[in-house]
Length: 302
Image (cartoon, rainbow, N blue to C red; front, side, top):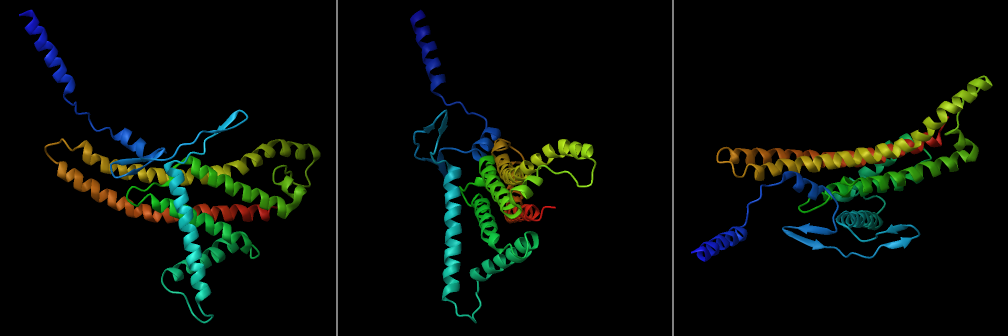
């Protein structure tokens, strides 16, 4: 009898282990999984792994060049930028001098002319047309990365602080190199070590002591603000949309009101998605416009 009881206990224990245990939906884990970078691409319910390579060792540093989902969508945005400008360029080459573009070519021309006149020339100067290609490339590259996050299974690479930080670093290099070339070594040094003329030597020394760290920090806070603004806006929008859709699964077991929750969540997520389309354009414009402003400020530093 004891053996039978033991067998019954073992059988019930094995059965309890074999039965799947329903885990509650973890909204936080879902959100973190969607906004964080990963070595795979999600396509429906599948996770397509990306190739992983051994890190390159340079002294004490190891550089991992393995692609991630953010890298893949950054490359896709770059390809879209190249295709846009190549196709528009070919369209204008085929046109006669008296012809005017139409459709997509007309929209791109309007945007290019607006950036040249209202962003580049207005903030950098009438002689700043040579900066227009860089400012336009920034705008379209960021815009495509923002919009790719709105397509099904897409990823906004600008929702990563690493991506926005790299863009801000690139803008910083352009700003400081431009200032050095325009002002010369002595003029550029005055953008860091500045003391108003006409002061007593003691006052000039005090101003140098106080203002030098402030000016130096100011050069770093500009790109920092660019990176944080773009990263925060794109991440917040993505988390908000996913959180609203996640409410459907959170309240899936509710017996009453679940259809109302689902309908309300979908309606609000749809409205925020439309708003995020506008924000995608706005944030790309702000990043490009502020870069032009900072270039103009250092070129005409007083």
